[in-house]
Image (cartoon, rainbow, N blue to C red; front, side, top):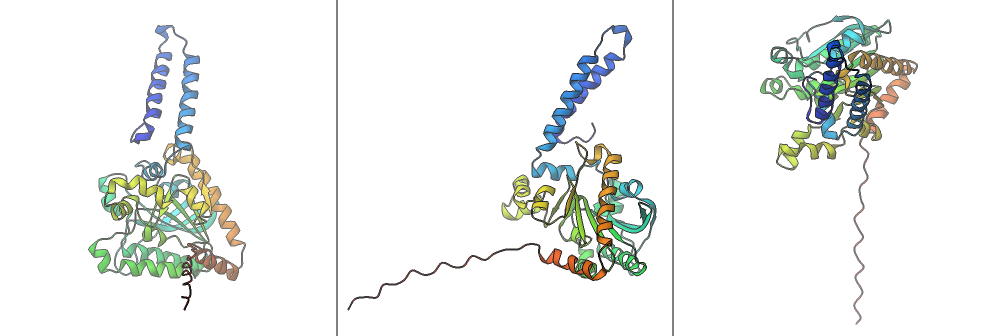
Length: 333
């Protein structure tokens, strides 16, 4: 198993032993029958894998969401969707390759798909800016969404970014304004919008594509206002406290569903999406299509009202009333 994580070591070791048994079984000259041993090892491997991945900590799920072999937007565009035609540029400054988008088909129906894209190696990561978009990336996404709204095409966004690019150039070209405009405009588009967090959902960089009628999240993805490392550096002055921060932030799919910040969790194969792209892609297709159909069945007025109320209901809080001051006894004269 390449690029395995720390908590996957027991699985890697069992897989190595299983491969050795299979290799010996394929050597006729040894005259050994290892079928029973292989069957037991396969069972133990499956049980160990299931036990580990059903009991991951929040920090381990963050690590899994960042796995270098995890499927990215372009992987799903090749598998979940068909007939993808990429569109480029924001028609104002440049073509940000950290965001890809264009026309595609889902279940044979035309849609507009937009997503953040990371790289697989150093060269592609430089090209994609590690999946962190500049202002022109969000303006490109907005241009495509306006195009979809004009022609009545549903919008699907795939989110996988640590956050928008925080560099000087991005600030000079008004990254905060670009994201803010996307938030405003996405609340007003009349066509159905479905968003899916497929890996990292980091801060405003994720939210810039995340204002939707339905927000889905893959089982091992996360969605957070700040990265665990950033939170740890602020609160505990130590990035090594990231596991503690990940737990406190409540950023895993299960916790987000409990808080009603996402609408549904898309299950992944045991071991994560990177172990079975075909199954993950098919599952994502089914979930996207179902939610898209449900949203499309609403009238425009009802759709916009539900979208607005969905986000207005997020983050409720109650203020504690100050305790009443104790009564001061009246002095006796």
